[in-house]
Length: 253
Image 1: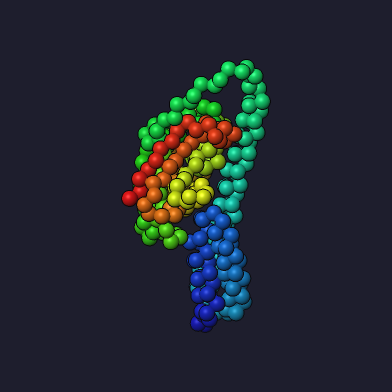
Image 2: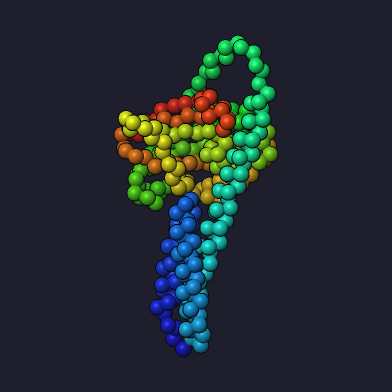
């Protein structure tokens, strides 16, 4: 018998839209709700079409289930990155308590540029090298979500002696990276992380890097205007957040 299509079509809409949002941090909480609604509608459609064809019903239900699975997996990945940052913070705190108490004035640390310059981070556990950057207008490949342009950076991570390191946490959690667009006279305008700007790293951005190995990745930040330069800086470690070791300003015009 002919399939009753209304519920199946609605389930496809909810499931499909949910899958589009399921990769984006924070926003994927909404995607989870869409997936649940789509799944419920799919189940109801199965009951309504128990003696009929179920093509649209199966598609809508499958998309909804996939959305829920992707959201749960993505949330677990970011929870892991947060756990890595917490462990690094604890280890760095222990090291800082053993510093020599001599009263000699510390030598001024030289601050290097960022582009194509290996930066030793987290007390020498790994090296991060920014290889290129570009501004991506809204709607272009690499910036299909949101409504503003983003600035994207491509980088390499060389694991020297970290037993639990992945490309995403190397930049966001452990690297002490600060990305600022100084267009506010009263407050520091720290830019928010945007969605992944390069789909080539979709499945590798959170994979563990072997000691001695090097991995590539990309990260993007949402711009708050289209003229003010963006300044990126890295700290020696997540605990030494004010001890800047690399800093560079990037024009976006």
